[in-house]
Length: 100
Image (cartoon, rainbow, N blue to C red):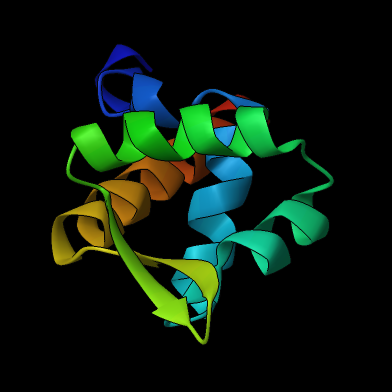
C-alpha cells in the first residue's frame, strides 16, 4: 500500500488543482473565464492555484489581448499530463488494494 501512496502527488491534493488539471486533461486549452466558471471559483482563487501549478511546470499560461481585452489561456504541459496520469494511477491502485 505504501508504494502506491508514494506516487500520490501533493500538487494535486487540493480540490481546485485537481479540478484544473482534470479540465485541462480533456481540453487542449481553456481560457481563464471558462475555467473559473466551470470550477465555480473566484478570480483570486483560480489565479493562485493556477500559478502554483504553473510554477511546478504542470500547466502553461499564455496571455494575450483580444481586441482591447486581456485573454489568459491555460494548457497542461507534457510533464503535467504525465504527473497527473501517475497521480490518478496511484489513486486507482490504492483503491484497488483496499477492495482486496
